[in-house]
Structures are given as structure tokens and as C-alpha cells.
Length: 521
Image: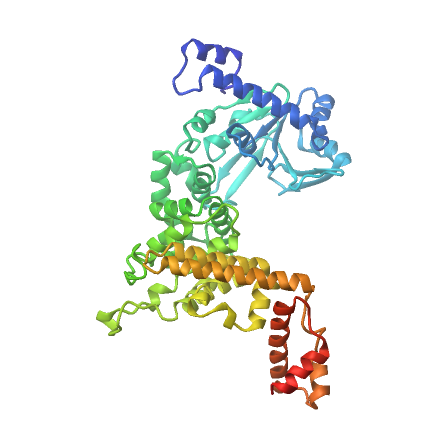
């Protein structure tokens, strides 16, 4: 087992392996890791570390996995605290933890406790595990493992079951030493993603590791090591493979797992994610609708940038870091309806290449893809709405839109409205055509108009139109029975209220609304 000590550092200063960090870099990392240990122990949420070491002098506690990696890299968010405890039985660990907070055993055979100390401010529970070995049962799914825990198991054997070398490092919470049996520190320096052991073995144990490898490359900006990448490419088809179980045929990699890894990658780097999915073959197997965008020609007078896939890539490249997940998905799918709706002069006798109705077709395909990924109903509906309406401002002036539509999507739901405006801007900027500047000017005018409307509604403190005039008011004033005619009056009333608020910065009285309705039948 590789443990970086003072002798290692001195050896490096004299002239050690060129694959390792320089002496100065080693010293810096050693100081940083000791600082991390002190910092963790100083927090009340982690008082249990020294307390456990005090009650059980034989105990060894290690911080393992992604947090060690991220701290060395210098990533700002450190939230996933995973510990391995040696030389203490599971029962003794539980007896030690229970008086100190909430404890839950994850799976009877996993040997992992979820722990939240009393009065904890942590957003995620702490994982506290016994050393364990995983035995693949051959199914290729992340649940297809037999787990064996052993308090006496050498730490190196526990680390050997992990997916990538950069995740197989551990920090001794007693001494501050870094334990690195698979030279993950070297791979951090090289900025590469590399499996622990043979890539084909690691991926066949759990095919979702293919997605994790791509996700780490997108999140960290690392490259995938050659042998690891080759295995990813060869085995990407297994992400949609099935197996027989007692319940029938099921996917080896659950849709929820696929969606979780994909969305994490998309949040980290949308363009890198799609490029890696494309180059590895994942795109072809998992998102055939995106694959179908390739070589679908667009009218060069509007899209000189290339085919639909090229335009989508440009759209993803223009995404800023603070963009919501729903907008990232909408930008990926906004033109997914173009391949099935394409019409050309040669085949269809039209004047130019056209994609009539591609927004509606794309919305239905988007809904299908989101449901296939088992995304939440709310996220699915919002992404679908964005795709369906991404041509809204191209087709007409925002001032001519129904007032109820503007209020619903730009005032009542600010996030959705802002995302549509940003989708509009990015779609324009990703389209290489002579009218681009004109379209961008128009986009800014729309943004300014919406800002004016929002400011007016904020000043008037208007939340709903129904407290100004209701259906009951309309029936009473105009002698109507409940029915569609009442709704027509309310539509006209809403339009008047909307325009009044924008103009006067206050809401009208019921009397003013009724007067308008009487004078404009």
C-alpha cells in the first residue's frame, strides 16, 4: 500500500519517479491534507472522529473517495463525507453513533451507516462504513454485487473495489497521511480518468461506471485514459442492454441511474458531455433522437453553421454556468423535431428546406425522452413547454401576445419566462445568418419589454386579476348564467387589467373594469 510519508517526499527531492509530483508540490499537498484533517475535526458535526478514536484506541478512521480528490484538486464544494472505520465491529459502531444522532444502516449486508449528528447543519448525511469487498454476480448492474464486510480487512483491499484511481485515495484521520495504493494522486496531476485495475473488469461489474467516467471527465475537465476510453466505447451499448430476472426482462442500468448521471454531466459541461457521449457511442444508444440530427441539412440562408446537430452543439457551447437544468435540456432538445419534419425542394417541392411544425413535434419527442429517462413530471412539462414555445418570438411580437400568456409565463413564473428568453437568445446566436444582428436587437427589445411589465406589476403589487373582478361579478353585472360567455368577458377583463397596470403602475378598480366591458362589447 502506497502511503506518502516524509521519506517519499525526500526521495522525490533527490530524484524520484518523474510520474510523481515535485518535492514542493508534495509538501504543499501534505500540508493541505493535514489542514483538512484539522478543519474536519474542529467542526462539531465531526466531533465523533476523535471521540471514536478515544473510546476505541484500536480504531482506524479514513476519509475516502471523492472529497479527498476534490480537496486536492481545489474544488470549492465539499459535501460528501465518506469514512471507512477499521478494527471496530458494525455493532460497536452503531452503539457508538446512536447516542450522538440519527443512524440508519444502508442495506443489511452493505455495512454502511448514514449518520447525522444532533443539531447538524450538514445538507447530506455522513457515510460511515466498514471495509468491504464486492463480488460481482455477473449482472452488470450497480446492485448486482455480493458484499462482504470485515473490520480487519486491509484498507487497500477496500480501495481496490472502487471505480477510478482518483476515487481510490484515503486520508488517515489520525495521522493526516494519504493512502494511495493505485496512484490516484499521479492521475490527478495528469488530469486523467483511469479505472482501478482492468477497465473491462471494472465496467462489466457495473456498467453505470461508464456514465460515471464520462461525468467525471465533464465535471473535472479531465481526459479519459486510453485503455479506459476504449472499454467505454466498446461497452457503451450495454447501457441499454437488458437481462432476465424473476420479474421479467429489465434494463441492466436503470433509467433513473442513467438520467442521474446524464443530468449531472449536463450541469457540469453540456458541450463536453454531448461530445463525449457522441464519440463513445453512448449518444447513438441512449439518445437516438439526438443522433438523428446529424446530416439533417438546414436552409443555408438561415443556418450557415451546418446541420441540425452542428447548430445544437453551438447552442450548448453558449450556455453559461448559471443556467438551469430545464434550460440545458431544452437547448439540447429544442430542434429534436427537425429530422422528422424536414421538407426539401427535391423531395417535397417546397421553395426551400423547411421544418414546419418542428416545435410541436419536438415537444412531443422531448416529452417522450424525458419520460423514458424517468425525469420528474414537473421538469418534463417545463422542458416540453420551452421546446414547444422556442419559436414564440420569431413568429410574432410579444406586445401582440395575449396578456394572460405574458402574465402566466413571464410574471407568475419568472424562472420559466427567463429561460424562454435565454433560449431565444442562444438559438439566435447559434444561427449563422445575415439577420442575426436584427434578431438579437429584437430579442433585447423583448427582454426590455418584459422587464417593464414586471416592474409595473411589482410597483402595483398585483398578484392575481380575480380579486379585481371575478366570474360572479361578471354574471351579476351582465345577467349571465355560468358558461363560456362568462369566460369571454373575463378574457377581455384580464386584457384591460394587464394593459392598465403596465400603463398606470397600479391596478384598476372593479368599476373601471366593468365600464370598459360595457363600452367594448
